[in-house]
Image (cartoon, rainbow, N blue to C red):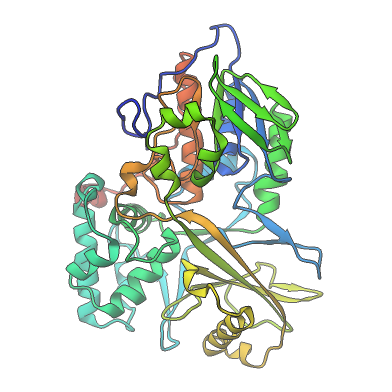
Length: 485
């Protein structure tokens, strides 16, 4: 989705107001940040025959999509389970390009566990989109028939609104109450889907972001809702694999090398611990809250939106890592309704190792855990797993670990869409990349990759090339095309 235009000096500025190297020269680009946005830009620009250097302060690539080394087993364990969906066309494109497209387990039947412990499978029927999930949804009997009917009406209303129609809409929670959604429906249906997808509580989240999840993820195309889970650690998927790919394609990768300052005196200048670079273009692919401290005063003054952007809150996500003495679940995942736990994932190879059977429980928008004792959180999660899985009641918890990323995603508050800058800026030679830029998507890996591709397109356009990198959304079926605006 190509970002809309912005007035100069406002978020985005002109995407073409950039330096252009000589027509016969390969553009020299320095990318600051080795998360998915910077990596996607590096892949696109490297394949487009540009000279690319990438600087990352950490000693590994991948950014928030990373892993830690489990001291008991030596295995790499993801900080928090990251998943993709069928609607994430650009993330899928990146993975195919670097040779890891087959490293995901495809889940087309989502196992929901109701508050009473009953199980419901969300799987597409033979009906065309947007009706393909309706039969499975209607079987979710932990909601009353009236609640399910009103949920359907609210979905219809979201389908008939365009994102632009919702620019001034209230929070998701308030809008749902305006649609006569019950507290139970909000907490046990909308919250289950949207809090995990947006990483934010519904009373804080923007309606355009929620519409993107519901309409593009679940209604527009038959396969949009399908969940894809990495079968290898993120440190291998986006770390070692991408580092090797970039090196083989001529990209200079500098790990453990923080950038001290980016300035624009006589063109872009990048100061690092090991010297100064004067590229044709610099891509700032850092978190939104790091941007202001990365640039000099002249750049900060040229971006009047920077101060407000820097104040945007982050939302935390917590991964509860558990090792049991035996298997506790026969399913590889569960969507958990009405409890502290939100998702449970089992390692694909039965979760077993010499040091126990591994499971992870994910809790998004986990502000409520702040100040709680870790043992208390683990005990509550284990109690909930015992209520759901009989095998867990007699299992011995061998060890546990809680990992919270306090700045996992930006808080997609109402009005944030108007603040998101485009990838190109009004400053010649300086561009942005990150899931927080104007991609039309919430804070997801898909948004990060789209932003990197959009940045690459802007640079290539500035040197007179028309390369297209952003992949289109999944095509809508004939009925969805007629019903969704």
